[in-house]
Length: 145
Image 1: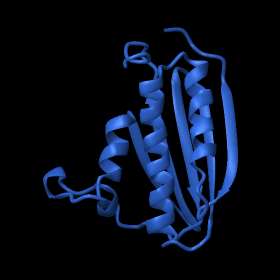
Image 2: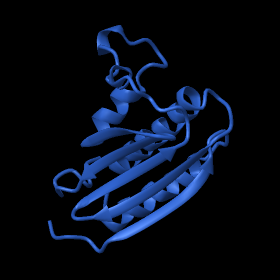
Image 3: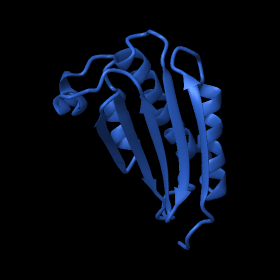
Image 4: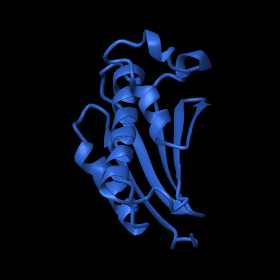
């Protein structure tokens, strides 16, 4: 698959708002630019929404904060970068997720993100966290429905 025309979209959101429509729009624009089918696009929407919800619930603990989101299409990959100003997560074990056999409802978020995206990274910043989700565009499963 050839390279796609680079594209970047970004926004700054209130963590306490229901912003799924804004996040969905970012994902849908990127998916449409590469000819991604609805099923694959919706899977990415779920991953992006799950991360947003986790930052609000666990990072900001339900309080209002800001989350900066950028979506980038470059070099045959779509990446989503989230930047929060919540307390930095220092213990990487907290990000590993629990054994799927011991997860109860409400604890599947990291597993879902990991299953949908090809890469999922976290970086501790002096005043928050940076999260990166990457989906490679190998062309084989873009229209998988």
